[in-house]
Length: 375
Image (cartoon, rainbow, N blue to C red; front, side, top):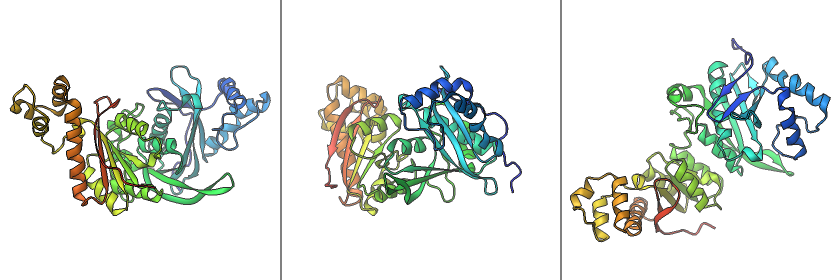
């Protein structure tokens, strides 16, 4: 047995935009609003009728019992500024012998898309693996639940596999992704990250785990397991968001940050039978290994000497192209060179399309490549 077997006293975890804390009677009004609105996100066994006395008992006693007995914990995800109920997060299936548990969360519809879930998950993960002495947290999400998968990825959880037919939904068994986070993942680099902010927790490599954003082979394997044939690479959250808006028909599992390993990505795509690779990036990401001075010269050149262009940063070259009215042409040529190089790595067995976007990740600047049949 472990030496703790308890979650300790009251919990208060504060992030940039959310606070994670126990339920109180002050949450009654918001909770009743959730019930009356018919919002379908509450955890199993939570009250679903707005009856005053049972609800008051549950908010003051019932919801806290798993915490007292050390078998789980249910916490409020509250908006930090207003204190209002934005969602819940909890630990369950706690095994103090093995020092493991599962985590689950749900957010009100009005609170989604603001990064609240990933902030809360990072806060709870650090508390559980640090203060509480647990070693492993498991997270499961339906393979069709793109939003929940993205929360897991942004929070540093690592995709470990697919549990086939693991959950019964609408009369049929459906697949779940299984993610995991263990204490060594946090020990390596967590202290250097602002845990309450919007940046994902970086994850160090550990035996038996695969970082979703840096182990590109695991990411590609997950795409193949989901029956998809397209890998979309992006560089950070901004380009990732734009890529998803550009390709709304693709599930979230198809999108990943390769961590600067696009060459490995196309090799993995070929090895797993994927048909196409789409790269969405800024000039900084795409220019690696591509002589921008040559691209500029091929598209008509600039008033500045070629040597000045060659010695400039990609961001500076972008500005020069824009000032000269050559951004579209040069952007497309850069995309062409990157796409052809990626296809050459695998002898054209994977179709590559490259999209260059502005530095803010708000619009497409240039595009080149071919699309494969994926249907």
